[in-house]
Length: 266
Ligand code: KIV
Image (tube, rainbow, N blue to C red; front, top):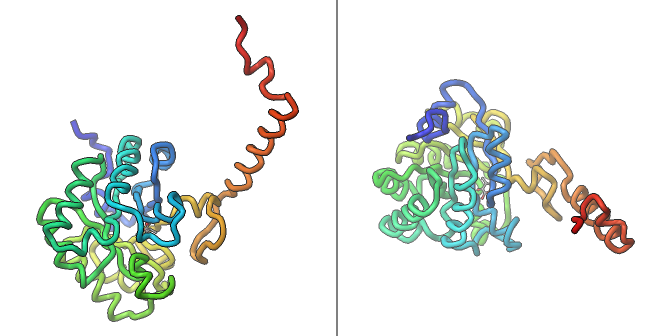
């Protein structure tokens, strides 16, 4: 029996009309997904950012469909309430509609996740329409598209308002149930949000979007090196982990761990 309180694609899309700001975060494993779900986050994204924050690559390009599915399975097993969306990795949605349906179909069949996300707007309208026709819910992603990094030459704010508006409208027209807006000036993102019937989820796109998404590792202060300006660090887990591990190391070396409390008697 379906859980009547579980977030579904139609319920997620309806949050816009209810005027409720939508929260979304990334997760790549069972433990983190369970924590985000228990905190009441409405959308959990198994993002291809996994390529960078989990696998240690410089870009999102290397992660494979099999790897996305492996991690989406873990996330899908943990989540009871949130909508779980899985990124289509590069170049799985550029290989024709048949192969896009095959890849997105594997995501839905092999994981307990409910939707896919793909980077693209007007240029991907045909693929979005084909997926939606096949019964696969699609979240589009316009503005900065990290999978285009080789063409862009860097992660840059996207300012071409007519093109961004065209992309967002084309994605909606093609059947997307929601759109991520990445790295767009806040006035442009707000204008797009005002024009669309489906919810916009911003990342570096200001407060005028219907919801917000961040990479969880960035929010928790787990990312080393550069973090984009749009990130707010809500915790400093790097320091917390480093202090805990250092204390453990010292106590083992000094012989003060384990104590009687952590030891069995015969
Ligand atoms: O892969 C990802 O984590 C994303 C978000 C940054 C939106 O696409």
